[in-house]
Length: 200
Image (cartoon, rainbow, N blue to C red):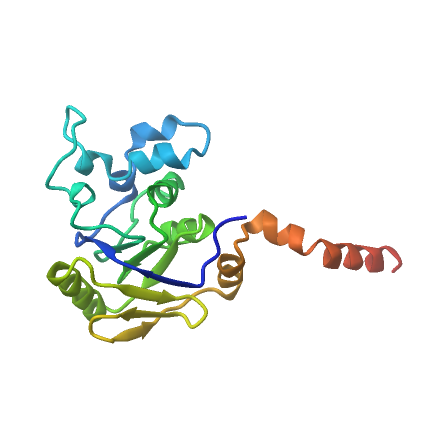
């Protein structure tokens, strides 16, 4: 069982780049790993931006800037385009992000995030622009993501937006259930249905 989602209040890490694809999130050479080691993938999130060619940290990249931290990644439009590799979602989760905010996500990557207990929050371009402005003005600014109410709030300005969330995925996130956990939780109902079907 995973950590449950309810209300997440956190500072944010800004990544105001558009069209960030999954190869930039986790380069293909790291896909050789055959097991899901979130720490390994998290350590290599945005590797080619995060590290120089000699594997020393790039001080100009935001993940190496101690000014910014938090459980929320605020990204530019069209996040997660490119190949469908689930490893990209593993890397985001492995780094410690629980929420990614953007004005648009590639569909497959969006679903991969949800399946790996990362919440993709789609906001308007105006709201996204405001978030970036707020974070750069005050890196300690708090953003609140309310999963039960499906709202995201910029606590500095008080502005909120509603975001869409599939009802099944919402249930799983709020109860810390992956797809297998959910099926196990429905075991009694499944057995009841099977017993009834057996007598028809």
